[in-house]
Length: 358
Image (cartoon, rainbow, N blue to C red):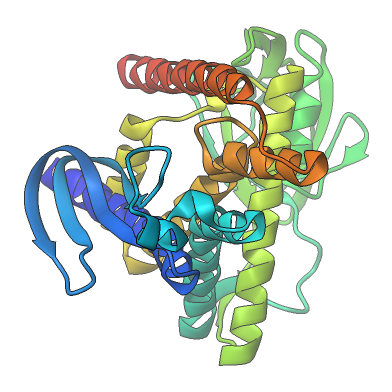
């Protein structure tokens, strides 16, 4: 429990600091006066003021942070300091300052992935025969056990289709609930033909699917591969782009109903994963931080008012209109964005506790 909590707080602290440093650094470059840099909310546990007049604070609730800038919309600004206020910067500077936070998270993920590539990653050994699914475990009393499947069986074909990947196997079984499936496996160098009847179950969305009660993987052999600094950075950026695109696709599938909203995770699940990866080892934990950093960057770029992406949307409207959106638009947008954010947080927490109790 202590390891899980420590791993979660450390990961969250790193991601928050990097995100807010993105905002802070670009704001300083643009000449904006920074009043406060805070990690966490609520009661201040530690604070100090630097020579620029910026107050650095650590607060009791570590679920976020903020950079408070001089802004005439939030208080009176002396005439001689107007050029230091955020709201008096050009729209392009404001875009750069706001976008810098989530982009800093994406940059962190790229660097973490690059570091892993330089240290060494496990990749499939070149020159192997095409991989096939392998039965790793069979549940007693399940459809697979009744059909005679055993751990170690190499699945060659199901329903007359050659199997090359676990997801193909799972998809084929899922589509055939209650229908007999011919299965060809290799066991001890011999090929066997079996017939299996997937039992009907339900997925996260409540739809009927077939299940046979096995754990499946690949028989692929892996070797450790290291890359040079330049190639590692390129691969790190590519990996970040792939994970970002996957996150957006999953969000799109949830919006269209093609994926269950039960896939949405909150702080409890994230903390659990932090603890699990920390127990596995350094590389797994770094991979976890990189993944959450990508998620944080993508989430904050969504065009939802209250998030960084919502502010960027306002600035794009300002560019098109030639003037900032009316205050009424901003008020309605903030309320709607806050409602969406609270709904997502509530759903994420509900999913967390459903997993915990289920």
